Image (cartoon, rainbow, N blue to C red; front, top):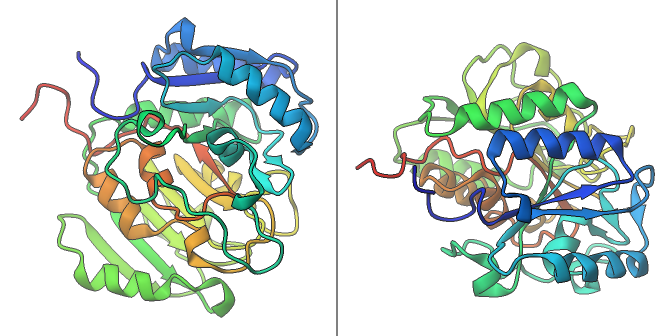
Length: 322
């Protein structure tokens, strides 16, 4: 079967931390499941117990990765859970752009805009010199195995799930509400879309998209995500994967989502630093991969980390089909 357009197994590079048995195992499972070419697997050695890499150390690692990356590669997948941060940047943005303080913010300030945001590019490195990056992360090996399985299962499945846009009583974390309302009112696709005002979604068995804002999201044990589903909650520290003061985005994966996004340092509540659901949904329903859809939906991604199964593409048509 020919490859679909955009980011695929042939132009995704898998980066493995050889100091981390978790990373080695996750990479082996992913390479086998997605048939990643051996020449697209890059081995590095970094501290597997630190949440944050010093920018100077990272720059040395990144230079080596750049040197060993095949020219045709358009995106990266990091096969580990720690580290998830490089100084003031997320590790996914640091691999995408290189460490650059313009993508950070001290206090409540804007950051540099991603040239990949809301673009029609199918080859981001060729077009912008950017390799969008995602983490294959999880709280344990089982979670990563299940995540991979969900991503593969979702391909070309055309799920008839529902989009849930949830405004909570947390006003500071509900800055996407106006976007939710416009999307719910103007959406003309075949899928159901619901804008709800509640502190938690409960009892739903058809969740394909779940965007909300809260420090902690209740009711996750009462809902069911379809393969390929994505979910995130606008809050300050969702991308702190080993954090305890706010809900980690790994909790979404544990509950059954296939991808999520959260910030690793205080972003303030700029909606531009979080996924725009309309942009994400438009790309995903068009058949783009999870990685492409998520990355294109965040205007200022420098402080945010992307996690999930990057090649999931539930709404694509099989190559050769009309």
